[in-house]
Length: 80
Image (cartoon, rainbow, N blue to C red; front, side, top):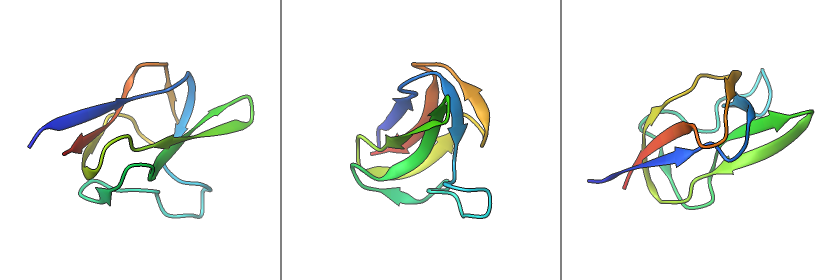
């Protein structure tokens, strides 16, 4: 299997869930399809979905919920 690392699309704050009382979009070992939301990046109260660009299984998250992120920073590894 190959591992694909998804980069952060823009700088901001990374969220793994849509709201504090909601479950994470995806967990390690979850399967994802192209277009599935794996998190959100918030910049100045604007939330941008981070969607899988390949299908496979989530192998790792490089950042935690509510971590500050930079554009291009690795976010998620997906085994394809």
